[in-house]
Length: 228
Image 1 (cartoon, rainbow, N blue to C red):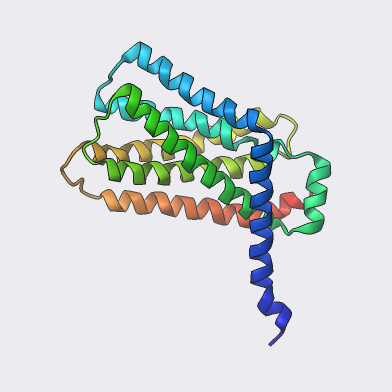
Image 2 (image 1 turned 90 degrees about the horizontal axis):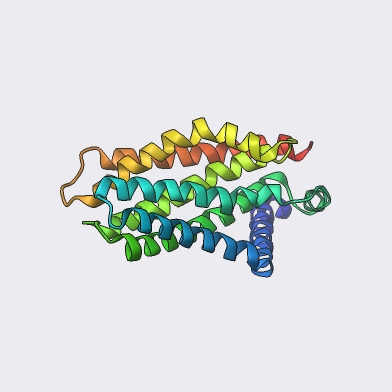
């Protein structure tokens, strides 16, 4: 057995972990970006509270996921757009394309899960808690936040190579994210009733399948962008 081949997965894991730590340190140093996102979450939910007070269940659910969509755009989409060409060349010299994109997917998934849980907390404080099954909705919130982050991280990687980066990401993201958002709304309605919804786990597995497809596309296609 070749010892280099045996140690290759461990080296890849170390590179991915180091890249995730790099993104975490940048977020901690550039705290104005994180605080800006937190302010956006709090102010948006507060405006909804002033205009609607305590909405009904379906409206509550729809508003929550629409806000998560815009939170994801603000929090995740900047992951590739903020990287300069010189910094990308440096990463190209020390890490592989797969390691780099996987680290971005993981970091943004963790960031978006945290933002989604924070949004849910503010939502329940200001707009009430109509949930019959809070544990199920928390699970859906984490899964949905991760799903949104995966899609927009992949789109940001493609848009980063174009001149009109933000516009291109919005154009590409609209037809992709709308079906996923509708699926999330459909899945999360089960948390507003104590009755078990037929086919609920099938829809959850469908969402997980879409996530795995996005990850596979990112791993396959990003190396071609990486060489550009």
